[in-house]
Length: 145
Image 1 (cartoon, rainbow, N blue to C red):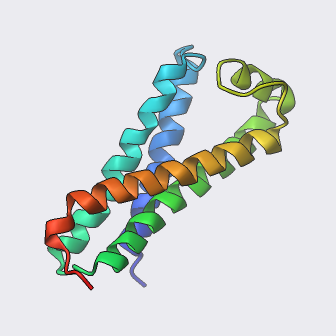
Image 2: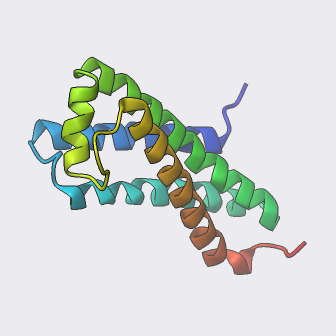
């Protein structure tokens, strides 16, 4: 059975973001807030690859391409959050999350579940934004329904 391009690119997002954050932690840069924002480029690349592939194969339905782009980014976000959840428990649980949340925009002392839950919704919001930006960028290649 052939794995869909959307799922492959979702896994690419997961592997890329995971490797990027592990590298940042290894280099001691995990507390630099602005470097955390660069993960959007992995999502942009993967969603763009999905849309380019679909346009190249003649899939020009606007709604189907939105669905494919959202699937790509949401698979990546979901796997990344699950990876963060597992990694956080491996690194010490709430103490590790407390260190992460000090350099992030959280108030108080969030638990691992609250931290991952809020990052999941942030990921969904950024997935929708990236999807809309790229679908509108490719707008002239899509057939209007």
